Each structure stands twice: as C-alpha cells, then as structure tokens.
Length: 412
Image (tube, rainbow, N blue to C red; front, side, top):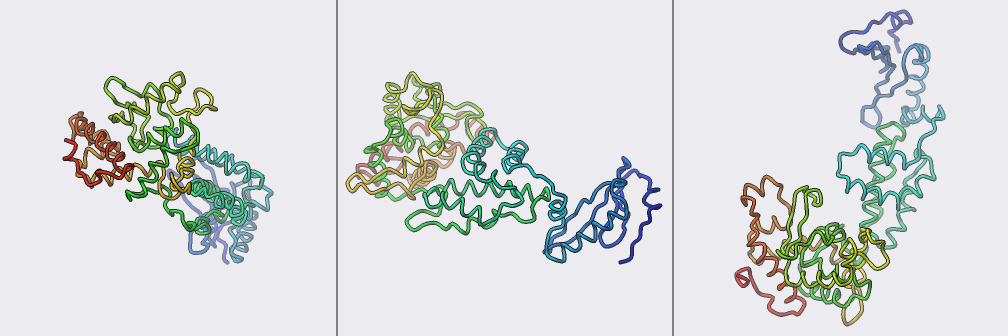
C-alpha cells in the first residue's frame, strides 16, 4: 500500500474554515477541524456496512503509531472482527455496567416521564440484577436466552416482550458507542414463540360474546383482593387505558355530573379528557368509596401504602386468574388484556352503529386540534353519555345472555 503523508506534512497542516481530510491511504486519514484539532480516522467496510474507527488525536498518536493501529485494524477486519471493539479490548478499557448505559439511554430519550418510569421499572426488575453481573462486552445471546426463559416459562409474555425490547435498545446504544460489534438481543423474540393455547398478540382482545360472557361472569366471581375485583368489573364499562384505571383517584370523579375527569398530562395524548359514567360504573365507585374513601387511589389494595396505586401487572394477572364460573378453569389468559377492552369496545360500538367520531373521542384517540375542529369543544358529550350507558347495558346483556341483537337506536 502506498502511503501519502509525511511527518512534516502532518505537522504543517493548517486549519481552514471547514474541516477537511488528508488521506494516508487504505482508508486512513487525518481529519483537521477549524479549531485546529487533528484526528486520525479509518473508514472501513464490514459485512456490507460502512463504519469509521477513531484512532486518536495527533500529536498524541503519531503518524507511525496511527499506521500501526491501522494495520492492526485491517487484520481484525480480515478475520471478520470489528476493529472498533477489538482495539478497545486490547487497551483493557473498563466499561460501565449495563444499568449505567441503560440509565444514560433513558435520560436522553425523547419520551414522556411516565413512559420513562415504566421502562425503568421493567429494567430494574428484569434486566439490571442479572446483566450488571457481566461486563457489557461479554454478554451473549445464549446468556440472555437462559435469563429470559424464566419469564417465558412463567407465561409472562408481555413482560418478556418489553424486557427484550428494552435490552435491545441498550445494546444498540453500546453498538453505536463501538463497545460491542453485534447486538446479542437481536433475534431473541424468534426463540420464544407463542405457546399453544395463548395469544401471540401482546394485548389480546375478543369480540366473541360467549367468551365475554364467561369473562364478565368470572369477574363477578373473582376471589382475589376486593379492590382488584372491583377494578376488573369497572374496566369494561369505561375501557380506559390500564394506567388511568390503576391511577384513578377520588379527585378524578365528578359525582354531580357523573363524569371522570382527567387533566392534561394524565392521558397519552396530553390533553384533558372526560369519561361519562354509566349507572353501573357509578355503583362500583360508590361501593369503593365505602372501602377506600379515605385513601388516595380508588383501587388501592388493602396491603398497599396509602399513596401507592396497584402496580402495572396487577390487572393483567387478575384477568389471567379469572376462572369459569362453573368449571373453575381459567378463562381470561390469552383472551383479554386490560388494554384489549379498548379494542373490544371500539369494535362492538361500531357494530352497534354509534357515531365513529364519538367512539374515537371516547377512546381519546384524537388530538386536541381535531377535537376542537370537529366538535367545537363539545366533544359530542350528549352522544357519548348515551353511548356509555348503552355500552354498559350491552355488557350486562352479554353477561346475562339476553338482548344481544341491539343497535344504538335502541338506546335513544
């Protein structure tokens, strides 16, 4: 390989208005910035992709040393290895634990604080305790597989999906930092196929009335914590996002107007939202007021601290434990998720011929500008009040297996 630079040429290079490169051959070059900083870099290809290895700054790294490291990097590439990773390993670089990189990622991520907290909770429970025990550049796919298999065997499909997804994000960051040459979490989902008898969807839902009948009857006969039983019964009537049910406080309830009220920041779309309450939903809340009226959260369990709502997995686990009222067999697992009620309600209400925009408004799917333009700030409230009572009556009809062939006109 013919080299182009000399020690004198490198020494006398002057900065310009824009950064520029001085090539030495074979992909090695000196990048000169307007500030006068001179940095050795090596552009290379590996497995069809283009990468850049930053070797170091001149004069700390001389021309001779830059060429030595360049040749060493070329040797790694010939063996199919990423020189960015291998050269750091040779230097004996001490990397931070997995959790440190994960926390950096969460800090920099352009996400809502509530999303950040939920991701951190999953990482603290299912990633940090195990992955912090191994240097980040030594973590392997088989190690991750053996760890996550515990979640898979326990049937915790949603937790497994989130854990793998979050691990993959952190390893992508490590790859970008040139600490690892391959993401060990890639392809992990393929090693955990959906089990027989369970749904492959992360948020299953059902519109089958026979299945819904058994599930709703199962909620009535739930033998777990009474507040959670009441939350299960409340959930279908309002079809809110699970977090808005778990974090429901007495301050959210407008008793006079029979309405749940959420302020901006409480909802996913970051806008205020109102939920008309059916007679059935109001009865549940009145019953809970006798039980938890002195506590902050409506569905706080007896064993929880006063200001702690049920944890994220509570409602999912409760649905999975819901049993057939006669046989005692599980009826909820793989059939319905807390979030799945939203899909179920949307589908059935559309089948019942309710106004599509009213349904979307009730689901809080529309952004603030569209709501304002379409409803002139009224948000179709009279229609939604009728719809939510009709929906509650329809659920009760399903549970009793009567009057199932109805439409919106039957409730007006």
